[in-house]
Length: 151
Image (cartoon, rainbow, N blue to C red; front, side, top):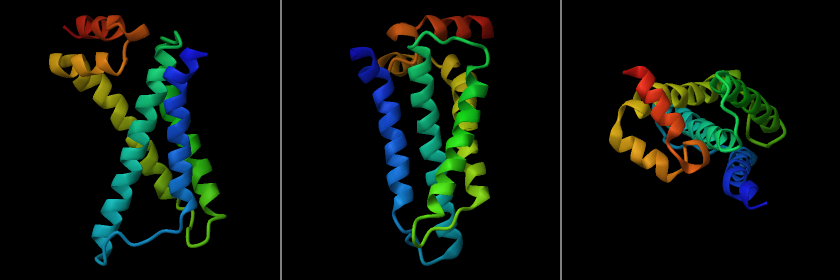
C-alpha cells in the first residue's frame, strides 16, 4: 500500500488537478489575444509534461521497463487530453478544442525528448532525477544504463 501512495498517488492527484482546471470557466490571461493564447497553450504543455513525468515515474518504479514505455506515455497523454476536452464540453464557458489535445501531446513528447536527450547526458540533472526517483526503485540503474549506451 505504501508503494501505491508513493508512486501512483502523485500521478492520480495530478489527474485531479487537470480535471479541476478543466471544470472552471475560462478566463482571459491577458487582454491581448496572442498573449492569452501563448499563456494558455503553454499551460497545456506544462500540465502534460508533468503528467508524463509522474506516469513515467510510477510505471518505472512499478517494474515496467519496456522499450515502448515512452510511446505508451504519449498515447496515454493523448487519450487523457481527449477525455479532458470532452469533459470541457460540459463546462459552462468552455469549448473543446482539438488543437488543445495536440498541445497536450506536445507536452508529453517534450518530456520524452527531455528524458532521452537531455537528462541522461547531464550529471547534475541525473542527481535531481535520483532525488525524485526517476530510476528503478530509487536507484539510477535505468538512467545510468541509458547514459552508458549513449557514450
